[in-house]
Amino acid sequence: MTDRPVLAINIGGVRLAAAAVDSGGRVSAAVRLATPTGPVVDAEVLWRTVLALIDQVRVRSGERDFAGVGVGCGGPMQWPAGEVSPLHLPAWRNFPLRKRLQEEFPHVPVRVHNDAICVAVGEHWRGAGRGVHNVLGVVVSAGVGGGLILDGRLVNGSSGNAGHLGHVIVDSGGPPCSCGGRGCLEAYVSGPVLVQWAASQGWRIGGTVRELAVDAERGHPVAQAAIRRAGDALGVAIASVTNLCDLDVVALGGDFSTSFPLLFGPLEEAFSRHVWATYARQVRIVPAELGQEAGLVGAAALVLAGDKYWSVD
Image (tube, rainbow, N blue to C red; front, top):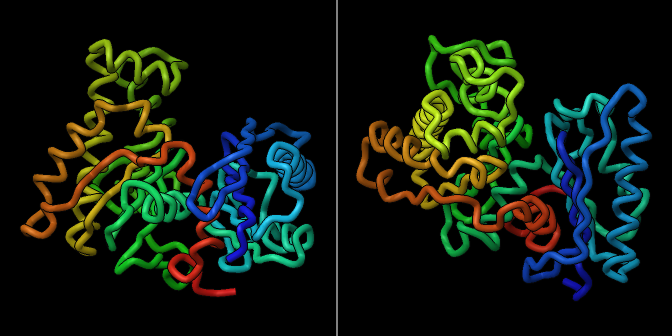
């Protein structure tokens, strides 16, 4: 592998980010901006925003030629073709993201995967899962995503969606989910869901996730109940995956790992109630060590450590 850094890009419904990442996983020249939204934002407007982001990284890093391009993008997507239709980016439907980037970077590898999978990869490569072989990465933000590393390698599944935790059933009689099912983890755990549930229980109307976190820290009973409810559901889901996959580490990332430290208590209590074997009780459940850079580091690892994290061309 060349000494040149990889261009890493993260595309989400709330923000876009890009940076240069070297072979040690060090992030430099990072640029972040709010994802453009609104009726005038079509596919090409969003694409030009990504190109402008790339140009800023080039200027900040002084690099014109990167060793490759790794991208984490919200799903669903056609993988490994990299045709993306992110739920929170309606401007892109079957957008040929990998193809368009390959046209911009014709002489180096371009690899696109789910953004939550990139967080899991980043945590295994250079974060909380470093040095172990079996890791579940969980991302909680506007939705719930995840990725699985088993026996030291990324598990893709038949469509590239293995590890997607958000629609694991935690209660078959639970509330309806946006996917059309009932009782999915995502029906209990996400920023919008927490705010809606808390408002229905008497918390403020029109409040934000950040305000909910502050109120929980101050002891507001409804805000704390919302976090307990979310933590319990997360604990059940993680226990199920741990029983199935015999994990070493679960790394929890996204806005929740920093905004809701109170989440880990009820999560660990529910986890302990639902794991049945001694091996499952050995797992460590920790905040993502790389924080907001986990997705960028993981995207870069699709190129820099492709023997572990990329199985197709």
